[in-house]
Image (tube, rainbow, N blue to C red):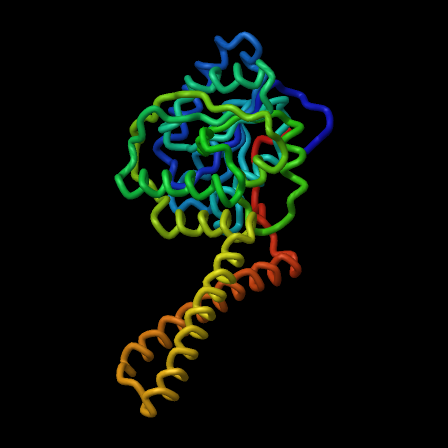
Length: 316
């Protein structure tokens, strides 16, 4: 990120399957900024096309030729939403940076509310949706993610994490110091500032198309939070190991006493087998967790890139 900023605001938008939305999104952004006192034409929009399967990159290239405030990056391989955002942040020149989705469920009209929070002294402002136009499973997953984040990454319980956020350029500079391949933006943000607030906004219906962010991607994001920014899973497996070891020792002593007193092996071998299977399952789970940590450490040491940029357009 360059030291001398040349615009008031940078809007970084990861794009995947946004071909039908991008023109309208840019129009709404421009309409909002033209009447914003501190912004008007002093802004930039950075689209990061994350190997979208449609014609999103062609649309971005066309928009960039028509609008000098719009630039774009095409990643060579699909990197994921948070890695794509990091790619955009590396080019952002604004004093304030806003990140948002490309489907207009995050309304450009709400950006001034986030900016007002930053101007009032906060380093970081999250949009908190008063209503959520998502399927039930996704709303439940979002609630679980926020709940677990309170313990894993010490998120304040009254703070709602969302991909619609605004933060200062100084915060962005600190974010870009992270070079690991497994990016979780919210975890990084919570690690560099405590001056954080939430702003209530509406959550809108998709302008067109359907969400590509399914259960597998949501699970992958949760694993990034759980494993990359916390050792709680390792501690949990250790506690389970101690618990089952204690249970095993208890039953071992019990069986020895029964053998000495009754002089015959007790019945109930099925229960012993169940106990062995449960214990074996816990051990395998612990090994799998440790293996996941070691695998990520290996990829980080081998300098797996966060993203790979193939083409750019509109950067000046």
